[in-house]
Image 1 (cartoon, one colour):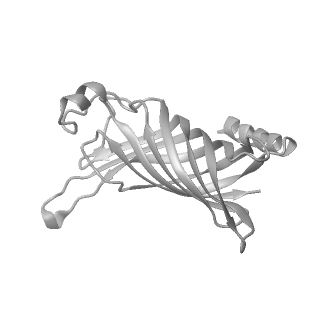
Image 2 (cartoon, one colour):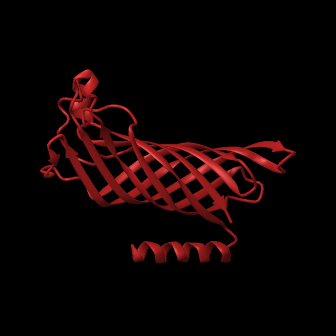
Image 3 (tube, helix red, strand yellow):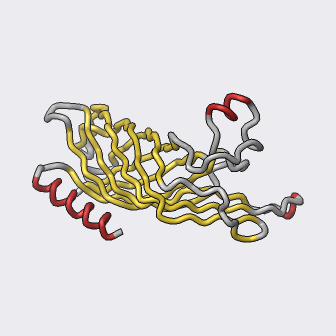
Length: 214
């Protein structure tokens, strides 16, 4: 974690020296894991970190963004005794993640806020390192016979909305491009295309994040 902190400080200093935009972000994550036999974005997590961004040119609508975040992913299934369902499942996957994105601004002026670019679309990739995991079911903590991959590569897409000149609200979806755990999906995947083309567990996220631009 010390190296991540030093890298973030370096990026912040570099951003100021190069006249990039930099800032911090914090938000909530709702997630599920495709392949664990449970459905629904019922796992609530947290994300926080920092970013730098740079417009391609002074009059360009395109921006490049680089982030470093701590993010909680995973899955959760709670029991429902009233329906005769007593099964429990919890999976916590904690990552240090580096999203690399580009965004496109829609030039819609706002005379009240003095903003020229209220909306933007973003897309890119995220490279993550697993820093902690915990898995349990109705009978307690699971031994983890099938380990989780130490790295996760995800595809990202989202929309950004400028609430003020400094505060941006971001809704982002994220999906693993490679399995975070291999195998163990025969119950969940019912057709042959999924069984043979996409085996394994995959992180599937919806993120709701506020960015503060210094």
